[in-house]
Length: 331
Ligand SMILES: Nc1nc2c(c(=O)[nH]1)N[C@H]1C(S)=C(S)[C@@H](COP(=O)(O)O)O[C@H]1N2
Ligand SMILES: [Mo]
Image (cartoon, rainbow, N blue to C red):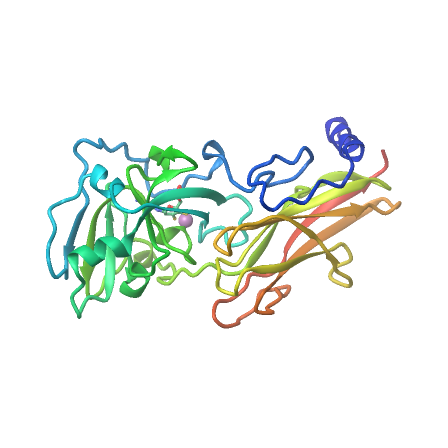
């Protein structure tokens, strides 16, 4: 047992396992070992991922061009013009397609922006337009179906957690496309083109062109190979997310006996189904040394429960259980 971990675990027992469940308290930090430990991920901790280096755009010269199959072309837009439109504020979890469980590349923020639909209503959309193509300043490009572009929940965001969108996250504007992995949430947008078809950057390289987020549950604590103490209490915690495809998360359960029995976790923070839920469960560690495996699974409001190796299910599949191996040792 590493001394430091032991001290942390004792602190947990001292603090008590019970923390008031307050779903309204948006970002009260839980003073115990939980990961993620806040509903909203601070900007400095939010994962960053792109094909090259982040691009620093000069807002004085930046313009957004909407072109292609539009009815009435509009002059290029300045950021101020976008900010003058009716704003929307919304909490959204963003997740990378390359990390489907979401152990590292997932974060949740409160964003502010405008509905893409409001812009497209100004330009009009020609009958034969099938996709909206986003061209980005780093050379990235991706397309989404026109119905998704017109979805009222599809947002062009210019603010992240009350800050102007940070350079790393796409300043001045990025797309928030509900239900879809990061690949469909382009950053540093310079042009939106309506077209009949488009092969996007990642599709050319074999990735899923639809990129629907699948239901998954991540165990944040403990970490793999962590040593835990016989007879002590341990908070097992994490996040679960279905991106709204199954009506949101109803419950999360944990198993420490290879799926024989399941224990319902407490969901201690949540927002709409477009944000992750955070959960925790108190494990009374048995009085035996050896290896143990922790499993976690979620059940959605439509009644879908994750299975060990994932599930092919309508409308969007699920990922298998996240499992974490730990070593039970004597103090
Ligand atoms: N312009 C641009 N946008 C992009 C990408 C990129 O490479 N270039 N990568 C996408 C991917 S794969 C992910 S997971 C998200 C990550 O967003 P974040 O860095 O704000 O977390 O950005 C998406 N948007
Ligand atoms: Mo990604």
